[in-house]
Amino acid sequence: MSHMSHSLHDDALYFLPLGGSGEIGMNLNLYYTEGKWLMVDCGISFADSYLPGIDIIMPNSNYIEQRRERLAGLIITHAHEDHVGALAHLWPRLRCPVYATPFTMILIRLKLAEAGLLDEVPLIEVPLEGRAEVGPFAVDFLSLTHSIPEPNAVKITIKAGTIFHSGDWKLDPEPLVGEQTNADKMRAVGDQGVLALVCDSTNIFNETASGSEGRVRDNITQMLSSKTGKVFCATFSSNVARVDTLAQAARHNGREVCLIGRSLKRNVAAAIEAGYLTDFPKPVGESDAAFLPNENILYICTGCQGEARAALMRIVQGNSRDVTISRGDTVIFSSKIIPGNEIPIGRLHNSLVDLGVEVITEKDAFVHVSGHPGQAELAQMYDWIRPEILVPVHGEIRHMERQAEFGRRHGIPATIVPRNGTLIRLAPGPAEIVDHVDVGRFAVDGRFIIPAGDDAIVTRRRVLYNGALVISLVVDQAGAFLAPPQITNLGNPEDESDRFEEVVLEAVFRAADKLTGRQRADKNKLAEAVRAQTRKAAKNHSRKETGPVTRVTVTQIGKE
Image 1 (cartoon, rainbow, N blue to C red):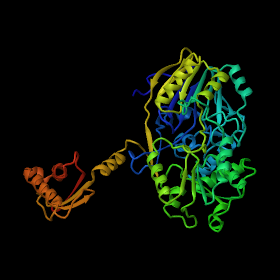
Image 2: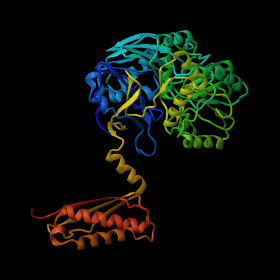
Image 3: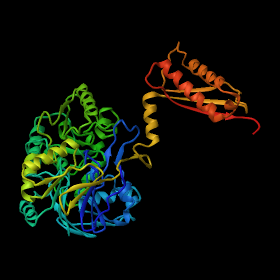
Image 4: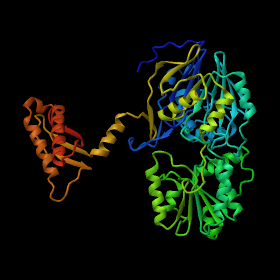
């Protein structure tokens, strides 16, 4: 990919996503005008088995780091990890002011404090429906509804035109936490004229609207009335309205509430601090809950995606000191299955059924509602905002292309579908892709942030699939062996009768014998010859497609 062959014109307006366009997660969007950049969101995604030992991945921020003296600020639209999770990791590389509404800011402060950055970062808290002037960008925060408190769209006004950046949203007629979307206000935004709508594509394949939190509350309240054992509800810890729904349904049915999971307790505390959950029942601790009759307790826990270290899995595996789950209990998964998590969730469901527990998921009953817009809601938003250009983001390629097609059918004059790294000129003139910038992913590996293609990860993946072989040689100045070669086998199968070690030893000697006197005396040449021969011998012996990752160390002793 070229590095900025296109020179940016200051009177023009550009959009550049570095993450979240072509995937669901790790959102990072950039706007440019009048010599300044504005960043909207800075999120993470969770790694899969292709990155062994890595939990978190983020967009590669090199492009904007190199221009950080022109970065006016970072807007966080809401507190979900795929929009704010990379902040503490990447801020030291960006060093710009950060803007967010009160609930989101409480969680940002906690994140930065954990990372030891709280005193360094300029934080600007913006009231709900407030405005921030960030360089040449006038940013209005507009409250929408979603599956967390304070989801904001941002209206970005500059000389070249107005952008409506939706963030994550839906239109919930009965959101329960926070206000309904204000239709008059949205229509007024459209009346003023909007150049581009940059919009969430997650649920474009749903023809109907996503539905209401209020209906979920009625259903779960009804469902609890027939249960006699302990009830466990797993949900997303950030979905404060859902946690409140579960707590109110419990109270209505004479059950106390116990919260299990650090992130869940943190989000509830943040919501109370920000003035939400004014009627939340006082939770009981895990040790006290154990003494209550089964029909008088509801546990709300993390782990709805089958995560190994989350609360629900620990309870099922019997690793919780005070909380047990047994025959006659009920587990309600008040969440959706995030694509890619089918296997761990399936395993968790099977473990529960094996214990004699009733499992209820969104497939069995209306116990979950999505936080993203279906087609009916998108159509409503288009009618309010009436943009000249639709830019679908926050989706895989298939979601974004489908939303572009849906928008065109709905009468939006122009659509443009970005990929991470596409530099799009939105104005003046027709919207077009003018350049591609280098993008990629960073992986968080302990205290290091490394590119996802780093040798450390590639080697780890190779070892994971093919095992490893470590050979230590001690030789004199001429390269003659002073001790038997030491062979360490990591992850290559050998049975009682197996000759694995012999085969490798023979290969060591064969490789050494093939070298001329001068080559053999050169420890690097000796090491490389032995590495190639032993790897090949191990591969042939096991009849595998590829040989183990092989490392040879040569210690040479004698006169220099």
